[in-house]
Image (cartoon, rainbow, N blue to C red; front, top):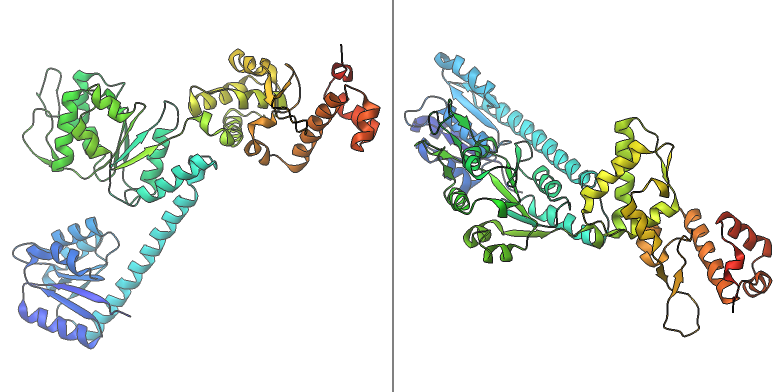
Length: 489
């Protein structure tokens, strides 16, 4: 097991030598530094477990070192060394994040106790941070709903991308949840406690976009009465999300590229360079290379943004998630509006499942809110659905007959039938309670049975071993006329 490594910074060579001897006696590994200007580089290469810094030094003082260390390594413990005459400054250092201070001269045992206390405190802080990240990770499904194979890939990519510093390009149709995915990446990243700043590139006019993004100084243009912070500064330390990046002015894209390369920027009309530390996530509903060819997106900016590409599937390609999404939105809007909508009838659910959802999740969310608000009871009925969704249910749906006749043709569910659309696949059925799925299977089984036996219930009952009364009951509950299966030739 490796020993705890302690970095000591002091401009006094004798103090450094004494600290090194004490640390050796306490079985700590030590790294001593007399030049305080090189501290951050040494931390990056040596990876100490704790930093001890003198407060008063001629080049870079202890306060500045404390600030830099805590900014780069928030959980790394820092102990300040101070003389009797600078106790007030030591108190201030503790307020600014120092884990402890030790007054000179000090005993070896005292330094050892302070080091162990600071290490324990740091260990607890790291454990809390790890637990927080784990909780955020476990809660991601509350934000991004879906267990289909397509969404499992998205979840996996979010988890792989989040801990990195790489820029991300999210590609997906309008309404697929691009901003929600960007927020999930931010929440699971090291920047989670810092700002997430979304920018809609469509809504900002060209003449204002640069000022909004970079900020401006007083007098930069007509109407600039005061200095103004831009969105880049607002996002500093966090994540900037540029939605529909291909709608940004081509010239402004070039300025953004320079900022990403240099990590510095100037406000509009200003001369001062500002340091910038952001992660950039961009999104588009276009195919990026097509946008490059159409000169909607700079090729060099595309390469800078497309470090981690992420494609979001449209809702039409993840129908297995529709019921879960619908349940989530209905519950959400029922709670928000004080409603008690708890159910949706099978005919309505079938129509919703068969609908193509050109507006994707956003369209589903808006419709769910409308259905909850306008519903007169606790169940959403087929008649509550908008015409474009109802129309889908009027067209016949192909269903495998399940017979061994050898025919390649498919049988059709008559328009208006109450039988469920099993052709949509097991994903939609597996989320239902067993009894409900079993009932639906029995209904469609009896329908196909009667088709084969041309509506003759007695013959169908003998062939299947089902009681005649059971067949009559199932048909009655489904409001199906048994005569509709008879051969009319």
